[in-house]
Image (cartoon, rainbow, N blue to C red; front, side):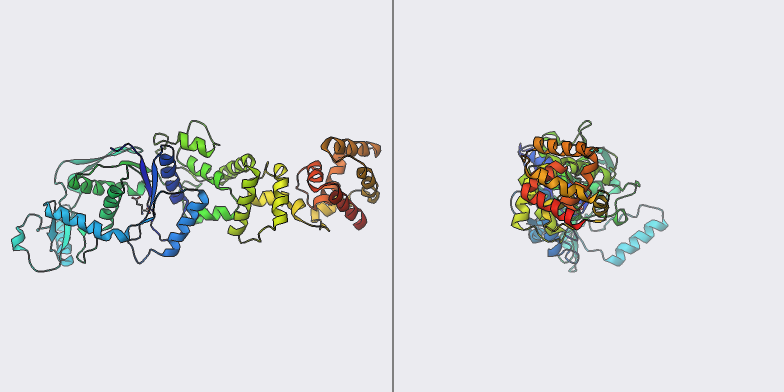
Length: 468
Ligand code: GLU
């Protein structure tokens, strides 16, 4: 086996990038990236009726959002059909495959007879061993000569050894009568030609592996390491489906989850590293291995995603967050931030990013910096303003006018003011919050004052006092 690890993601372009596909892509990406290997992308577009360029674009977009960069060109499986056919013809030339002239009716009749006689209904072609000189001039398919006895063992890195009796395998068609290759052949030829060393994919493909193995063996090719991962289930333990909510990876971008949080969460869906829940990309690359993949299906858990997402937002670099928020707004079809808003947001980021589980939550907390005067208080803020005696804000403003605009001085000034009014700062906080932000959920009053600056803060307090 060559030293360099080569993995691939091989989606069928029939829809968006779904959560399961995103996780498969991520596992392959982590495995390659953690080992200085290559991660390739092959679009399995042989089903012409169902494959669309829009779906390919959506898959690429989803991968780009998740930062799953691939090496080399995107490979189209359909375009490689001549090469797949060439391999079928090579097997034919070597006597490892044969031309089968049986018609659909004949195959059907074979099956019915087998059923009546209670024999296996696997089709056994009468053309397997006939002398080619006797071949008729009729359409034919090319079938592989499957081993007739013994066993095929799939050495799977997740499922363990999976043994299939060879008498349960039929002589699979490689090339149809119109000369087009079947999917199973295409996958093997592509994986071989692309130099794929490790195939990590959903366990719905485990049955295919036995049939794919026949082609590897007939061609004398190295079999890649296979790791068939259990499919993802919903919180109710049933296979993840539409009724469990959003299935498209990118829908999570539009809901405001950061890509790093999503990667962390997807990595934990079926893979574990001790008790580690939160980890960085660098740690994931270093830790990811096939041994950590579980045998039982992982359950999708939105709470856990939210939790990890919040931790990643808190841990992110401010400028990077600001950029990612812009991308989120575009994905959610919301108005972009102006240049001023962007730089204000970045300035305020330090006091916004803790305890925001998603970008909408962060932006809600950021409304004090994104809004311009006059600030419209929402219902809760209006109630907080109404609860304080009209004079208080009017009285406070000149006192703050003379305070040094530092956290310590502001704290001192506000505490002194509260004390002079026989109350605690906590009682003043709600109306101040309401005056400064027009909202009840905000960063601390001091952070807001520091970010807004003296003039803007005082102007907002005056506005609120005047409106009262
Ligand atoms: N195209 C297949 C799918 O989307 C993947 C095949 C493979 O990984 O071998 O499920």
